Length: 350
Image 1 (cartoon, rainbow, N blue to C red):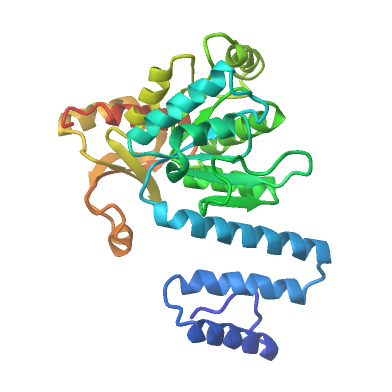
Image 2: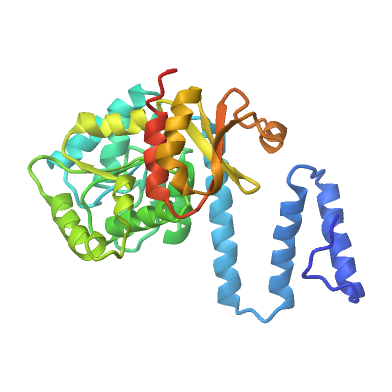
């Protein structure tokens, strides 16, 4: 194995530590992802070798333990599409937004999706009520001033309790295929803006985002007025990034946004310097020519091409049955990338 750069060649003790780590991995019979596990153990050892406060180590240890628990909880369900629902913990049961959340969650489970919420009261309880316990995950945040998990998800094996907001938000984003955001307070807006930021910068996979509210309120319309005036109109956010989300008061439109996004598009991943877009059916040669004419500008070089499965994907048995397009993406034009996905969902071969 290639020597970890954090260990110096001249340091005999460091060589011994590398040997010790390898012996631990050998004892565990670890073959898969051995290089990454070696790095992880090396980082842990670095905490002992460098000047680090006890609090720093405690934060790192707690965060890692939370992530491990969450990964283990979600792993058996990785093949199932999931919708995360954000919204206020203070929304009461007779609020139209509560009832709409129940309705949308129930409809999504009929499409074979599962629901993820924060596991608390209000909109979070509404999402789990609509989906049912068997179709729900709760990612609860431990707070001193709010009750624990709601009755719909209490003591369920798909409930994860977390101390840190940053680990909780990481799990929401990583494990979800779509997002429904209802009106809420500071926490909801924090989640909404971080979600937009991660997709806008390519730190999260492209996904449909719906800001929903009942016809009786104007929460998102007021929010959009501020965003338009202070962000889009002043150039602080690219005009193309409007494509990253929709605002609606129509439940059917929200449901269509989620299901249509995956009508043909399946997923994307980086392979070397290529962005590989996986679809159920690739475009025809004439459609691909049209796609290049309209979206070729998002390539920093070359063009959008149909390709066979890459060796990396084949080795990981990742989406073997899917068709593929590849491009050298400029890594900036994520609004245009969303528009490309919309186009691919309309190809004639479907």
